[in-house]
Image 1 (tube, rainbow, N blue to C red):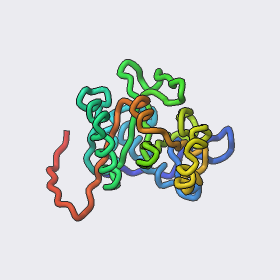
Image 2: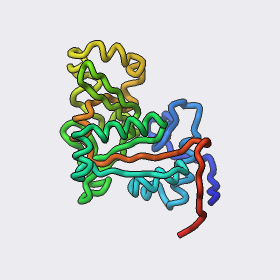
Image 3: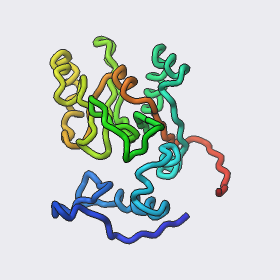
Length: 222
């Protein structure tokens, strides 16, 4: 399906910063992601419509790949957390450059009525997973998570940007120093895998396979 859009984009008029109200590129001279967002919005009717929906379908729509989701509260997944199988699966998907994300999902609430947890995590809000690191000597697994909204709704617990835990593991911060060069306002942080499993109950994988793979597609519509 072809979707045609113009270059008129909503922006923050009050601040006079000409910043897009919704998606924006890291480089202020670029706005391709805002155009993709507008095309997706046009396809679904309004900006408000795309505030909620099925994450797995969104991953497929925007990547052209396939998606897979896991419920961290399911007994089988809980067991895989204990055995380390889930961590290994996430590492495998990350090494293949698949898109990873997570959410603290409450089926009784909508995105508008969802709350923010005491340690900063928003309910029913999609977070992206940027990195996964394991430090055997420290007996520690770390996950780097990012809120696409920026500095609102970010983790304020162990291993966040200002956490005292970095003082207990000084060598880790030195090893990850390149990651810490990102702006604090970009909404990214580190947290332990254990805390991650407690704060989120859904994990999503968007798989875009390399051209070296063989694929078989069936066209259809509904």
